[in-house]
Length: 284
Image 1: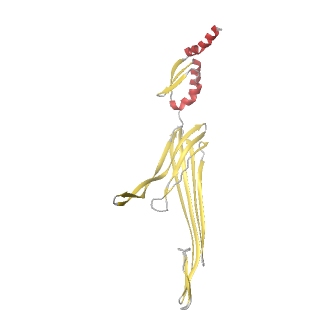
Image 2: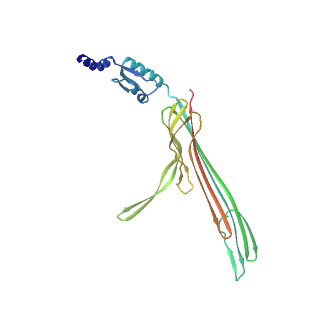
């Protein structure tokens, strides 16, 4: 019994004695890329570390051969990719209105209906007879605005990419400082960068790609000096190489009606946005 117990104690030492250290150079991948996959394959009692694009492995001959076979499938050249992103904005505004106005009467009684403005800028007809004036105005306008941005960037498989182009717009800033003599107001101008671009990190599995992406689409606004229209998306998507993938979009629609005694006006505003991407492999 004592001999059997001693033999059991010596088995780990015998296994350790059969282990040898080997340095395995990496040709295409980095240590950080292969270590998470290789580490679970190391036998009990073995050790794995890495530095300077080399793996330092201590294991039995059989286990070392198994790990080198796994490395042969992992340590392949990184595939070169191109990521394309398109961001579109389609805005439309429609306005229509009709009204009657005028002044009818004599020196004793007079009825007056001034223009309300719901049909301002439209066609006008005015009829005059003596001191009486009767007029009508009709307007119908429609304006559309389309904006799009397309960017592309090349990146290796497993790498990170960022691209952004745009401009700086001035923004007014007012500072109020309270001092012993009262408040001191300072008006200055700062600049804010607006543009179109995206951050992306692709991972491949055969002909499919999983992509973490955060595109942005900024345009100068119409609300006043320094205003900015912004569009942001942050998501993880997957799809096939060479196919367009819709990341998302947004849509806004508003309408209103204005009525008066002799007038009516309607307005409608629509603003739709969409973001699409495609990942292609660059053939060498």
